[in-house]
Image 1 (cartoon, rainbow, N blue to C red):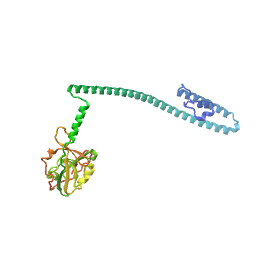
Image 2: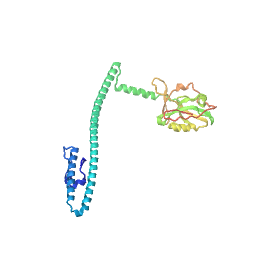
Image 3: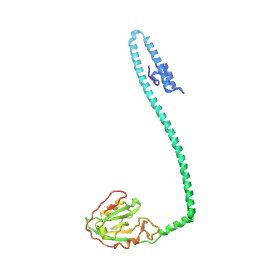
Length: 305
């Protein structure tokens, strides 16, 4: 036979069986071990064939059947050797890949340690430069300075409170409100008017402004309302609509003289009171002529009414 591979269990009855059970000896390559087992199998095969030849000619049927079984056994052994050889080659490739991956992992871990050390050194240098900069500009970075800044911020937050405005708006069933809104509880901000459309009810009313936070509409509280819920509530309003609003600054500016408003539920809003002095009458009513409700889907998009 010329097939190379491990000895199957079927060969255990011949001389090769003992070697098969012993396994591959240490320090001997897989292919060398397969070659040795193949020779032992061939020797055992020849011995069995000689034994069959010594059977009495009157029992030729036994000899014939035995040799048929030996032929089948030889074929199975050859296939098994081929499969074992393929598995051995694949295993060898996988082992080589594993060695390469381990080497890459070791290199990556070493690079990570080096980079972490470099980042640490850079942070130390940055901190040192910041301290030098503060020293040159005369800034004192001590607990007293930090406390004074916090006290100043607290003073700003405790400034006066502006009034909540109520605006009356009239619209017919075929009209829209004429406003775009943004914000909502899920975004951490109140329902805000981001745009007022010219010629529509909100614009003709004159009492609503871009930047107004809608606290309630017709007695329905919108302070803790999500954006989608506010869309539904505003879209359902008909006829005479009363808005409860307060102006909210787009961002806090320490140089302005505007104040913050905190309602009874604990919500804080930045107030631009001087922006409202030139506004329309908070109680002004409006007659509607035309309008259209437009809803744009999106987390950060405004909604038009």
